[in-house]
Image 1 (cartoon, helix red, strand yellow):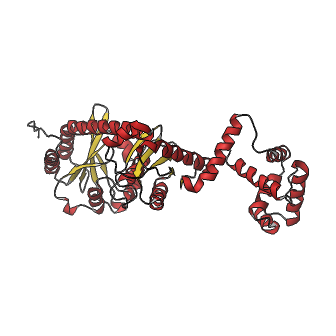
Image 2: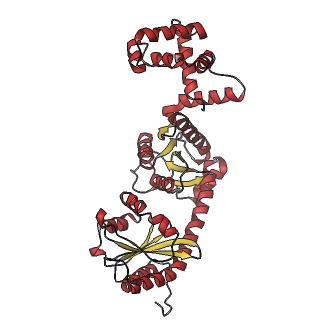
Image 3: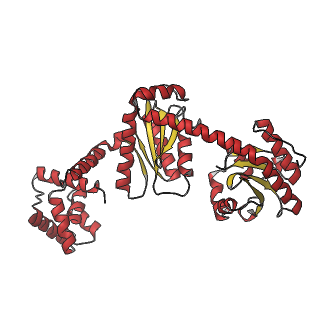
Length: 398
């Protein structure tokens, strides 16, 4: 290798590079890019472990091994190193690794992972360092090409999300399956140092492993901290189920917009998906969640009503706001007691148990609510208005 061997980024060239590294180090190796995606691997993996086999089958680090890497702080150590590292995972049932960061100047472009029984020798360290220098330009070219493709794809997906004639043109340029379409919006529950969960969830929406009739043939992109996938739909219930599974797995907020007949109407589906994400974020308080617009449409409309009223300077809560203010100023719990009573189907004993008070105490609070704010539960129309305003209160931003 020190004689100046050159490697291209074709599959044959990368395999030859992996073989050379394995021969020099005397151990089976894998080469990963900066996103922990498998680039290539050497033969001779027969004596490796389950983690290596899973890595090769998945073409990336499997989820179940990521906590192990975090516990060893390998992401931090790799980011700040230009020399080989050694990680002994045997306590977790995984063989030790020698890990060589691959860098171009100060930019990390990947890493070499060799299964070794002990900390690398001086000769192995020298071989890994020389190998990384040879691999760096190959991986840098791959990353530059991948990022260019991602940027072009993201621009086309953003055109799709806008609907109209531009969306029709963009659809013709993308590997988007024909037929009815829907937009799925994904947003992290909280800002994360890495966008990895969002990227992986988006990939799950257009991966071939997704059941037929849901999202196979979809496309996705990231924008403004959120992710959007445009997916073909033949079964809305199955699509909603796939989205719920991905949301639970990656801890995101997910909204599915209406199904539209073609790309020219995707702006409507995107608006729905964004609305669902806003609604779930407002109601969930950071807990995440997933929903289809059809399942939360009424709450979404009520949330928009609250926003419009607030923007116009109106208070949509009416007498509920008066009671809320009374509680705040005097430290009472009249409004909370009223809400529990109605939620319990006007069962005073059940509501009192939930509030940990005596039923007579609850009845007294209900009378006081009527005296202070004129909330008359005996009038069906007035009771409906109270319930509606309580729901509007829940949908108002904190």
